[in-house]
Image (cartoon, rainbow, N blue to C red; front, top):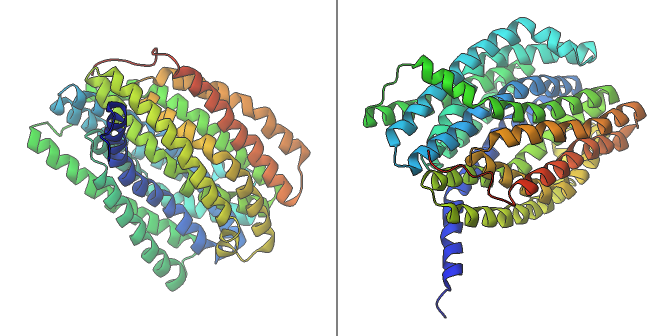
Length: 447
């Protein structure tokens, strides 16, 4: 066999680095939406109203958690850059500040949702039965918010240190435990949607304890103080503002989608919840490549190695689009199986299948978007991501308004909604991110 050329050898090294981080991250990312998928499968056996209530409450809850995803993404990039510059103690210190920030935000959000949760859910104008189920789930699940956000920050620290295995173990363990708890609390003790929420809270708290324990051990090993430094915590919050704005634009699109789905009817809302769950399980798996991009781009820019950053970006695009094609094929196959597995309601099955067919076409674009998102996050280009996010979110709102006005019935309505708010949104983001990475303005050298 002839010796590999230098270019092929370099690609092999880059691929190994990407896979070393992406494969464990893939498992962790798949495990996370399994929480909602498992809950959806169990709650669907209770009633359609319970499933619709779960979808509504999950939208509010995941909006809070999703808006705080900067705790993971910003921490991964900041820690990786410090590691690349050879400043391990600084890297751990930044991660600890992010963990304290996460606990503070989680506690504030807990109080907000317990006090105002009913009013927030009522804004979606659901039926009384759906609202009652949603309130139960939201108020109980809110108790786990500090733990949920602490998991994000601690995961960002560990991944920034180039370790993707521990988050994988924790995520798989949490998802497995959730299956057992759902079976006992929902089916065994007949607690209904409340049992689902209790199971989620227990799992998130245990996951947080494991990850924070690893953070404490690393800090003691490096001689880093664990007490909160209010100035550092405040700095971490200010640095994360652009990422918050970027995430806010994404969540705004998701919330508007749920608002329109709620207006289409209970069946479409239930089907929308299931379609979102399947999409998160399969499409968010592509985000494993984005996580690898964050950690690697941050590390090599911290070391001022721009040539490797360009190589990583090129390979991530290839992996992202190719992975999207694979996910699309899997999703197409799932569209003929998943509806019957999730719900016995034939009307929900038909609407779910229509939404999944739209998502099949979106997956290669999603792979491209996710990896470039990760690259720019790792590069510290959050201000551009914030601007691009706001513009692309605004661009899809007319389509959502058109579907709400048109109000097409049955599967056609949900398919139209997903075309307007998912496929079109991904296309707009792909254009914005692709234009940015053509030059070098997005690169920030050093820690």
